[in-house]
Length: 416
RNA sequence: GCCGAGGUGGGGUAACGGCUAUCCUGUAGGACUGUGGAUCCUUCGAUCCGGGUUCAAUUCCCGGCCUUGGCCCCA
Image (tube, rainbow, N blue to C red; front, side):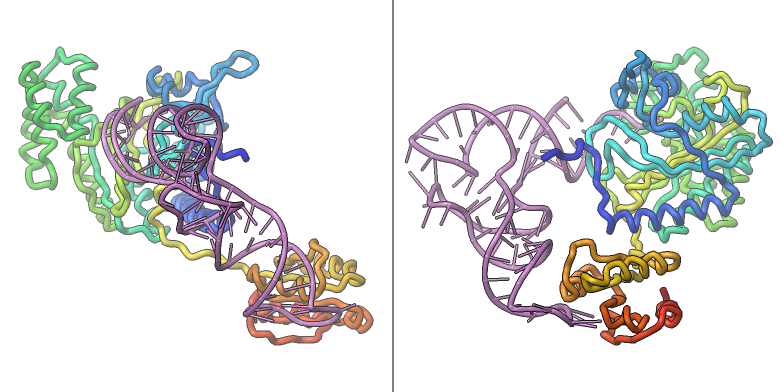
């Protein structure tokens, strides 16, 4: 027997039913904000992703050479492809561009709870807009989507990598990229002892950095402003504006300037959402402002977006299955042609099955019962001769003897 | 890549190193030729893969694969 590949999943009908319901709610929420769907290819040139994230990510990507010798990759995320499309085809459209997507992505990683090699992301990219307003919209939308699927048990962390970078570079001109990266890694791990030691060793002024990291609420915001210069003050003012607008939606982020994880291309506001009630992989949303357009050869424009981890969300969302009412047209062997004719007619409005097992009448009804069909329509010689149909409500056991018009009418009154 | 746990029909399970691998559920059919659910009978269907130890391996050992909790990583 052939097993499914490592890190992939099969979704049986019961689960797909629920996944589609949640997907639809997320789409609806994004569309209510004026976002429109965009679709990118399942695979792209590998370069698109290495340009964004460096050669080292090849280890974590499904990359391959096609028959023409091209280096391709299954998309590990969808932001870079969307920006590619923007540059190729949408640069001259009027801003803002509000785009959303829902698709599968692939990463070659060790699978564990909430982490798979094929997984689904629902995301948006917002291109253009004044920074404070656009960032507010992005964050409010992410929360609106989560709320619209009935999720409320999560924490929103808001950070700013611009301020974070400036906090170590503004008084330390000679600090190189590598050292910065090391510092960010330690911040992300919250390993402040090692961080302190490193800063001491390198004689890096960490006052601004630690002031930021300690900033949990707005009480020390004025002290922060004193430490930084004009440019940083403007950024802080922007954050305050965003927080104020978010409060309209009753969204109150936790300020968290330790958000720094490996996101070289993020440039300003960043945020992450964590679900309570998941294990190690509890982040269900991540996003922020980034600069990719110029890197990909386009004309500079400010951009931001986020991606929701659909599979992790499915772990915590509670959703009822949708149960459509189903009909089985049951007939004797000699009347099958009539059954198929009736089914053709009824399918214009209803969900209708017919027997293809060649079962007798009793076995057809037994099947209907065991798979949860709600109504059986019985056609035998008597029905055909009298041009009537027997409708049986399998829930109540009631039976009716009806003409075609009355049959359809009655099915409708039963809520089909 | 690292540390730990696990793997028996489709699902859930039993088997001190020893009989044709247990039972429940399920599948298909029958008892029942125009009326479902109950009952009974029959059928189908499994020891993850490969080595090793042994007279004998589902059981013990090693390796792999897969699942799973965590670490690394998470663009």
